[in-house]
Length: 443
Ligand code: F0G
Image (tube, rainbow, N blue to C red; front, side, top):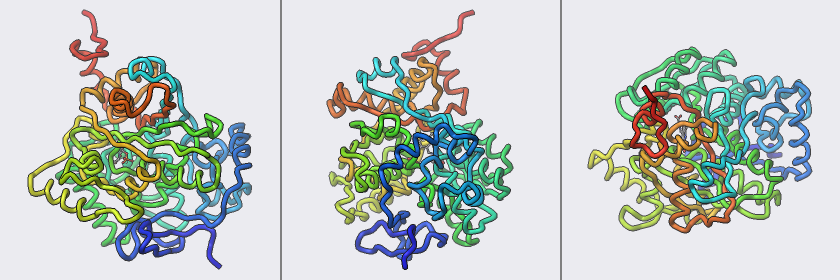
């Protein structure tokens, strides 16, 4: 009999399957994997999830990730049995996802021109970014398969989150980072949490290649978003957003785009919820690239060879992606943005990303560094904190409204992916009175 959870290749013409206990980030033919469940969760669980918010000191009810554990039960445990939960599930004392839900930020709404808009500050996670949602689940899987050391590449937030959970679980952690391209607050977390930092000359894409190579040679356990168990935890970002609306789907969900793990997990959660009949409408995903790291925007919108990259029901033109990567390499095109979190040229989850965009009739746009800084500053004026890459969300919504793609009476949820970990960015912004929302000091 097949188990209730298993891994499955995302390519419909391949479809290879593996048990959850296999440690792999791709199938034997090199395609990414999904976690699949054979059971269909009853929508009466909505009430259970809601009740768990009154958590009675049960950290797995307190956690904004594990509160939804029936929808990501890859450990196949009795989810009501606290001893089983404690034995298997990794949590930073219930802190992940606890504070993140959509908030109305009136000044951002007024500026971008849509009132039915809520922003969800995933930076209010224990390590300061959305990564904790997926890291709690990836490290749970690592623990399930008896891993003692995890490994990742990072623009800073992944490494902070991985190092934090590793420290808490007594695991070792190696983090590969692009030297000189990581915000000081993120780098300091990797050091503080006791991980081994390995500096790579080059950018994030180079660091990811180096860490995947190392993991391949040494049977390492990778916790980047190519790990399908990461994607499972990140689905809860969408669950929390929907739960706050009594599971009434918004018109749009908006993310900054980097390696496209978030886009992938948003798509997977919506596919599952729709299939189970938990939502009647499919929200459209909008991904916002930085102009300086805009591979998805370029390929999705046909800016290279005029061909638009699409999932195409499981038959994407992967040669187009290859040709574009070769073109970038041949012409020395390197990603360059002050928003280093999303300074990524080769999004590792691009195929899952375009699958999500196809399922949701999604769109991709791009914004400049100064637009992201304005977005970040505006979030601050509502008393919330986010980093520059997250500023891409209000900036992108504004642009899409201007272009008539998002309508003024649409309902929009934007995900603010991380907290500010480079204080020099807002300080420099506010000291320069030329900036739109500058708050310069007086002498
Ligand atoms: N926003 C922030 C704050 C991030 O740290 C990242 C990615 C993204 C957005 C992009 O998300 O990859 O799911 O599209 N940071 C990774 C890291 C790459 O290493 O911390 P994505």
